[in-house]
Length: 183
Image (spheres, rainbow, N blue to C red):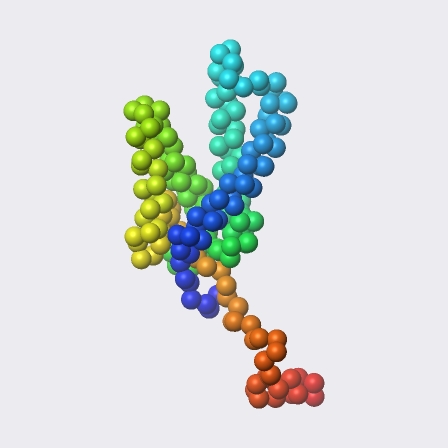
């Protein structure tokens, strides 16, 4: 594409993450119910420790496949389409499935480390949670830590020129082009 790649700002990223959370809630509920219906998993019961771990790995894999599919080869999630953003690599090309999975794994680690620290040392560990995302506020490229690790960029996807106001009269060039196309 020949348009300039403008990085998505922190606000657009935040809104996209919130929207994505709503969509993922439905995805996780659907696939979680399917898992529990097939395996008769009843939740946090001491006898089901192995099944609980399998359930967690299953949900991480489902969400990974969701993002791996939508982030790769130019596809976009519903939130990305709605908010007009696209994921590219550093050169502006579409992201490969492997790079999309690396981005997902890096984002998962950026969330899992503070949550794990919070479980080990207390709520103070959660203070590290905004650090990977806070980079989008200070870096000129507006990249998060997982974007830097994966070599990706979240850009504003609006390659169309601004539309002419419907009441505005056509310009001389557009009138000439219209008459030439009818000849």
